[in-house]
Image (cartoon, rainbow, N blue to C red; front, side):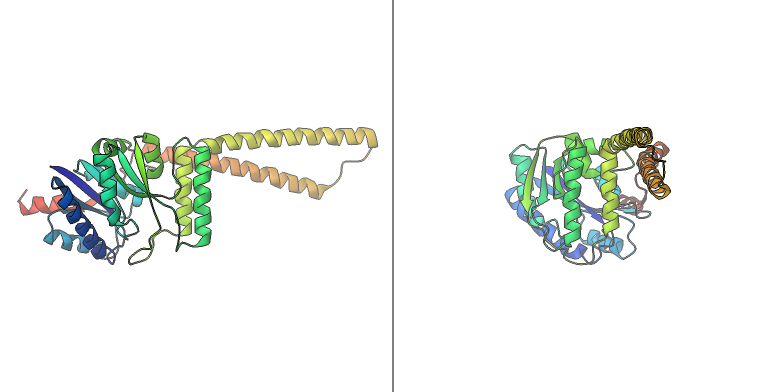
Length: 322
């Protein structure tokens, strides 16, 4: 027998979870018919939800022993939830997917086939359309993928979702990467392994509202760039060299103009503008270095990636009197 762990990060998803559970159990039943050796566990990660997400999950556990959960003490973010899911998974294979049904459970048999039958270490999904997304968000998302692939050696596929299945060896390698500032899409590309990509068209969420605002996505993008590229630091260096060259040429121009034409040096307004420009570039470069320094500072604290307030194993222990 082999076990597939279905890992589902949840943050205020009380409305979507019943729909997701119905769809994933139906899909699991279909897979079990063609693969009788396959068993399932459904591991929900409650990322410090403020609604009834946890009680909804506990209700599912009461009627289905395959349901497990880890509930955080507060909201630590999706990256921490993904890490917690992989760390607590028991399966020979693990699949990560969202509860909002934007990761179609119907694709799971194809994902399983790629890993189990075709020998891939991982099978991942990517959206080929962004139908239903705001135009501005889609533009910045595509621009981000182009930018980070030019700046980083990690292979980050445009439109990649967190919906993917992995062998135990692969997801154990991810768990070993205990960095506090996590960017899972970059980690997938960095660790390597053979991955098959499966494309699908964008699906809108089944219920509830997205938790990703534009600024949260922008911060997430910055996390990825800083976490997997030192190019911004090099860019700051080149800015400095460029401004030094421009300043040197400007000094030569002023000297030559004075010697040849005898013009007095004037133009305080233009001088102020140039000083402000140079000061702005300096602050920009210092800001880049500050971002890297801040990430280093957080890593050196060695704080836990998440803190669990309650788990399904705790409830089992209490029932057994342990």
